[in-house]
Image (cartoon, rainbow, N blue to C red):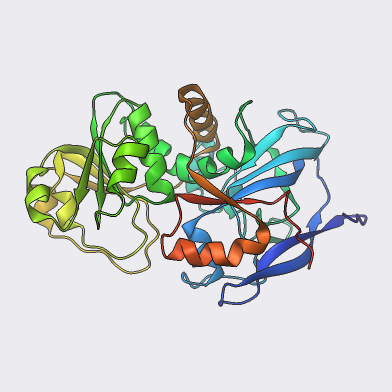
Length: 357
């Protein structure tokens, strides 16, 4: 890595246009400021959102774009005012690298709801430079948005927890759903869904996986430890499960009707939306009114919750189910992820990959 007075050059893999194809790209990042941490990227998970962003599905993409927001790296340099981290620490960076620090969410330690939050990539930093993500040699991040990875947790295992694991942990914690004995449902068994099953089971919940086909039955029950498996097109079984769930975590990232799932909820049950969907969803109001049910959403989690969630996963021995790939496989991995052809999260071994063209 060359260094100039104010910035250094790194190589990452970037999408150059809405085709979403990633290829090597050289760019500069700022030098380490007083509160900054320079990290060498070790591993980075591939999230479904990365596909939305590189293909401009949400209409807000800026190119060239280096994706990746489930980043685990090793600290190689710290700024003069960094207190929580030292060189050699293994740390994580998630979806956000900045916020205003003065609004209510920021003051309440839920900075992920700050209206001026800065995304890890496809955004602009306070210095006017584009933010670039974890499919790269290095990242510079403010210490507030960095978390220590617990000892004994491998980088590739920790990476998906920073988005997929956190996305499930945060609403369960916020909505008071951490207590054991609850009956929960997970709709969609992808990267977030599989972590949902593991985390909910570790909290002592009875967990039902709801899926569109029978394909993942054995996987859900035998490998992930779910208690029940429900195919949403099986009207008889869906009827049997009506009014049985305290909550249903909906991880499906494409359009789907909500009515069948609302009927599974008990009185005061919660349907928690987590899939990024760019078309409107619909439902009939009596389904919500007649059971005082809630349709709500939750967005990743705070830095505080990230620390809590990592400790929880360490204490319970939870790991993500992953397939590790090198950077030169990334485009194939993205295509496979789009077809749900992965158990359950791809993680790129960035440090072990050749990034240069």
